[in-house]
Amino acid sequence: MKKISILGKILLIALLPIYLLAGSVSATIDKTAIYPGDSVTLTLSATGRDIEFPKIDEIANYPVADSGTSTSIVIMNGDMKKTLKRSYSFSPDKNVTIPSFTVKVGGKEYKTQPINVSILDPKTAIKNGADASLQMVVDKNSSYVGEALNLDLILKLKANSNIAKAQIEPPKFSNLWAKQVGDVQKSQEGNYIVQKYHFILFPQQSGKITIPPIVAHIAKAQKDAYDPFFGSGMNISMFGGNLEWSKVFSNPVTIDVKPLPDNLELYGDFNIKATPDRTKVYAGKAVNLTVIVEGVGNIDDVKKFNFDIPNAVVYADEPKVQSGFRGDEYGGRFTQKIAIVGDSNFTIPALELRYFDKNSKKEVVKKTQPINITVIGGAKVTNVQKVTPKIETADNSSDMNSSSSNSETVAQSTNIGWLEYLYIALAYIAGLITMWLIKIRKPKEKKELPIVKKIQKAKSDKDLHKVLLPFAKDSKVVANELKKLEDNIYNDGKNKIDKDTLLDYFEDL
Image 1: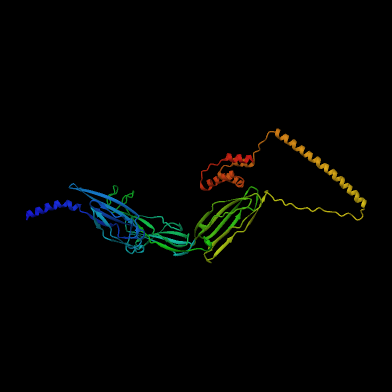
Image 2: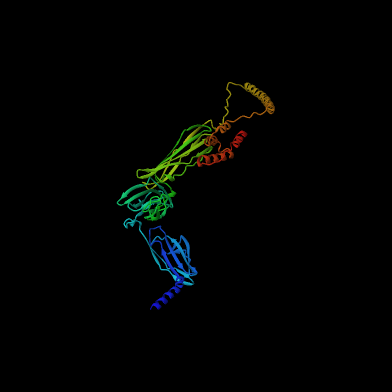
């Protein structure tokens, strides 16, 4: 019996390298249950020679988002054993079964076992005793384009867990104008610490809009991790070295958005007014118009006002919006400054605001009144009046002799008048010749125009912009420099303004 036992051991040792070289294949996943929006990583492992993995672009009809390969090699008794691992990540949004895959090892085919993946409902996370949960709640699932929606993002963290940090990824709202309002509200519900983030949303287009799950990154302190300063046990390194991160996903939300009629973009209840700083102005000076739109609704979507006035230069500043909550409703004030410089009397046209009224559910149009501006010292249009000569009828007491005498006198006067006109014309020509001779002999004196002095004295881009604005339509040189100045003033541009070119232009006029 001892001999058989010894022979058995010898045979087992001899066959061990062959057993280790035999092919083996397995399929595993990192988690069998996930929240919507989370990802699953499938890992195929194969041991042996000449390993061939299948080409996998999708799993259970979900595209593979990421993949990677790792290799390990072991040499035993002169023979080499190689293990290959290839991973595939995908994000299912419902319960799925990962199918069987075929892997070749040494020319032989091996099949993996199917694996089930379950999708968890974020609402049940707390019920199931999870350490963290994230929930997305909207006040209504149906709205108009531009109508405000309130969204709350609620993060709950178990108080007695070892959660050290919690960070929410900035939400991505497609086709929704979104703004976080106020600070994070903190409270406690039972054994959970609650953090509530409030957002206001304005749909930008009609149709069904789905907000995908929002992600929170949760860091837990590792137990029994040794820290060189504090020793063993649960602790958190100041460098974050002892933190283990995981993800928590919220539920998705779908909103049914109805279109506004007649291509309207504003929803709410608004008023508009336009106020000039003066209605009489000297030529070359600007009238400053202030446009204010106030009310509740998507005030941030009010468009910039632009208009043209004949024989005037109109420059519209970028509007400023102050927004926030007025009670339970979102709204604010839109303010825009518009400078107008005219060389004759002009009228500021009526400005129009169109919106979909939240109360009547109808289109409302509100307008400002036209404003007449008087320009003092500007260009005037002269009206040529026709003067009808006055014909006097001869007195009945006059006789033919007196009429004849008058006729001779008129004829004589006409001859005298003709000679006088001739003398006057000759004198005028002689005067022109004399002035021309004086002018060509006298050296030219270059006068410095007031505009040149103003350009030289301008100490800032804003000062120079005010000086040049009345001449915006007169020259491309002035217009180009104005564009540079506006970019510097309103967009923090770094354009160099060529004052020499401006001075040359005005001096040549």
